[in-house]
Length: 364
Image 1 (tube, rainbow, N blue to C red):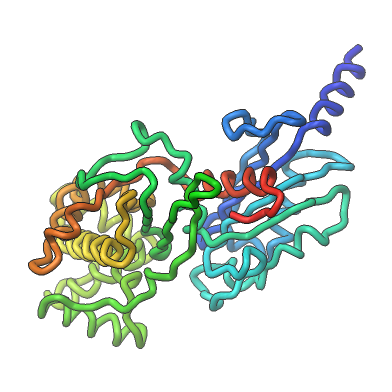
Image 2: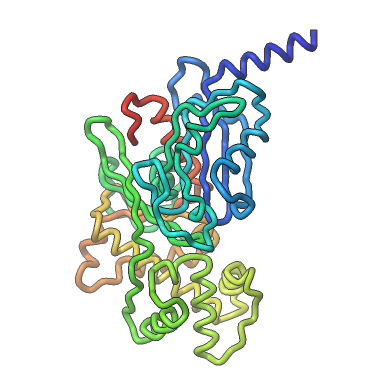
């Protein structure tokens, strides 16, 4: 009887429609296996079968990562994954292959990954359809399925249009950005990638001009990402220490966390000043995105760094966002939100996989 019950469970599992989704970041790779009953095409009906987090540095290619995850799922022989979507840290061409520069700080960018690594892979099963998306296309798509009551904090009201353009940005290992526009024919938002975080960091004061020179001396270039991300927070702190003749007080490998902690608890004024500079720059970048995209559907700030700095962010970012003597009255019409939902990119990867399953033309 026990053997029969086990066999029945295995048949039921093989009868499920399986979807593999992932958010492959510079630090961690988060993968999930979801299922739907045969013939069911409801996003809310999806059931989580397995989830796993791996250090990205532990792998040298995409197939190695996915094969490890499938082994950890214990699917057995004959498995078939109907749709797969992986959100990758870096530019992606035509949802098929990574095409950006190889960055030491982001191991997956060195993998030369493409969807053929998955769909042409013959082992104990197969992946029928696979796409890759930029990680912030994933975050953007995740915004279409978040709970707006639970997952958002409104930083500035504006005039919200649910079918208007939407933009998102978030600081982590780097600074990611993406945007969505409404598709009238399919009655849904469509996500697009952006590398706006890599645009030049422009100074708006003498203090920031000195910071810009420090960044240029360090890297040979400047970008908004140099200031608005975890390593950027540490960099600003080190600049302020050098300027004031103060020794760096915290270890390099935990510098962003230490600056965040001591800047918010009032124990270190240099840490507090570094946080203020990063948030000021973040607010200005939100304003730049408002002017570029006219996002009446909202500007959404995501990422663990932002959520950990919620108290100072809630005051400094809206102030900096509106602090423009020329265009301040114009940008005040665009709503600004902080996203509290954890792992919105993984949610967006699931949105794309579900659309891949449902759409005959397999486009986002």
